[in-house]
Amino acid sequence: MDLAFSDIAFIGFAVLLVVIITSILKIVPQGWHYTVERLGRYDRTLMPGLNIIVPFIERIGTKMNMMEQVLDVPTQEIITKDNATCAVDGVTFFQVLDAAKASYEVSGLENAILNITMTNLRTVMGSMDLDELLSKRDEINTRILHVVDDAVAPWGIKMTRIEVKDIEPPADLVEAMGRQMKAERLKRASILEAEGEREAAILRAEGEKRGQVLEAEGQKEAAFLEAEAREREAAAEAEATRLVSQAIGEGNSQAINYFVAQKYTEALQTIGSAPNQKVIMMPMEATALIGSLAGMGEIAKEVFGDTASKPASSPRPARSRTPAVGRNTES
Image (tube, rainbow, N blue to C red; front, side):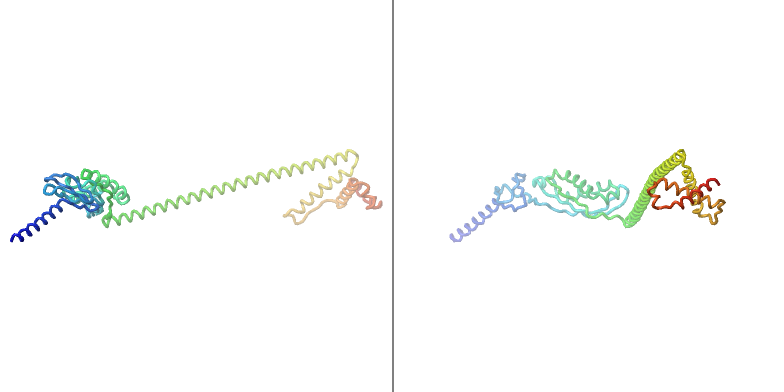
């Protein structure tokens, strides 16, 4: 009997020793923090790894997950600033930074975070118009994140992200927005078409202006060249008149015949080349024109000199032309 009692006592002592060792040694996994309460009051926080506590006096209070966590924000109805009703849901990410505050500053941590997120979601989105609500999601997320992060900071919580997932306006409102968007696009298309026509008209006007300027410059240049030509022609005419006058002054009567015959021939050419002339009446003697031509031949002889006239002409033709000229001048 004594042996049996000793065995039972040994077994009991071993079990008690295991219980005491288990209550003394605490292993905290990575990503978790344990709070320690001494006689019901918070004492310290156990970090990941092997930790020792005083048995029967200290105990583990809360096992807090320190990793980033996700909460789904359920769908809720909100009313925008312009009295449009929308169904909105979202998702929030948070992380516990202080296990003691998260354990003892708030009761029901996840429920508290979810409710404060939903409340501020309605507040922020309710202060915006529907157009802003649909086009400024980044601004909405940023504003909600700042508000909720400031609200949960006393709990030792850090809000990392808050995202709005879906915004669903009523069906009739979506249809009205579609019609509005179509009208706006048609308006922009009309404006762009009008601007294109205006630019085209401006370019055409500038092209016509440039063409008129170039045409005016061409006419100006042509006028300058024509005036210069007339000036040279007048100078040549004046020089010819001077030479004829000089020849007449020196006693050469053939020069005046040459001058008159030249003008006479030019007048006949002008009359003959007129497009509206079919029949030309010439009330003049043919011998006068022949005599004038003979006078021009005599002047040509005198101008080119005797060296050109001696081998090329005989004395008899010269004598036959000189009286003809005389007769023309007398007549």
